[in-house]
Image (cartoon, rainbow, N blue to C red):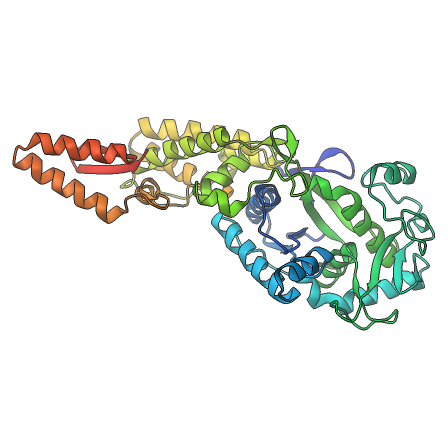
Length: 457
């Protein structure tokens, strides 16, 4: 089966074929680093990291860029609020973002471009747009003239009138048309700024991604990803300025957007105050649990994020790791991906729910098999995990991880040793007391011929 991806631009699943044979260029919008990220911000990272893994099984070279927006008005406001510099704020939260995303099992992208390292490229692109009469200067600002592009709105499938009615449009006297958007804005003496032909200033949000894509990936890329909320205005405006700067050349071949994460039936957002920060969730659950929860629904669907979803994800992973612990001594072998049902599910527009159901089937069959069949099933299960960034922990360590305030492994092992000695001394009351004491603290003991193992309940 060949890779099929849903293209937002056409509204249909399409056979994926990169522009250059065996080479894929993918760009995903990263964060504006003024705060910690919530789990809704993490969804596109997990989704496109999974796609990155899948693409690497199909093509020899996959270039994956995910940017950092480190200059923006929200960052400037955060610096004012905290009495620090813009650079300090952006550096602090960029590092926090990297740590959170690593905890969720994401691979590092091929390229991580920072907006502030590409201001000269932005200025060059803006100059081209002005020369092409797609942009104009007004009162120290430079704006993109949306009416200069005949098919502006084609990505989000909206007319100019619909866009103005449904969007928050800044009303400004220097605009020729209300829907025109800012490419460059002036900076005061106490604001970050760069010299430009239009005076000292800073870039608008949309031009950043266009300039970074042009520099690192070229004028046409294969895949552009992000959350559905970016379709308009961000991606629509990226498309407009990039194609107008490049003589109408196609900017993106496949646009991909993940669905929202909802809390209590409403889209999770900082503006609504209903968000769950990744670092807070990581205090309660392992990162792999969060990742599994995000992959348990199809990336294009909306997902309702609840404690029940996380608990269910933890239980499923416990089951998988329990099966793997039973076969730790079993070897692994190479896996022919094309023969695997989970792989074909992934090739069908990244259908992770079906792939996970196939993992269940593999795990159950593995638990009942033996010999070469068990080797093949274990190998396939672990390969499916690798493809989705799951089952990456040692099974014993998985069951022994805990949060703050819980008994550590050494203390538990000490009590298990004391219990074993109590049994030898025929002090069964103390043996039972230790078992009950550990159970009260969420530690379950499992006795077997090989000895006593433990896990957290």
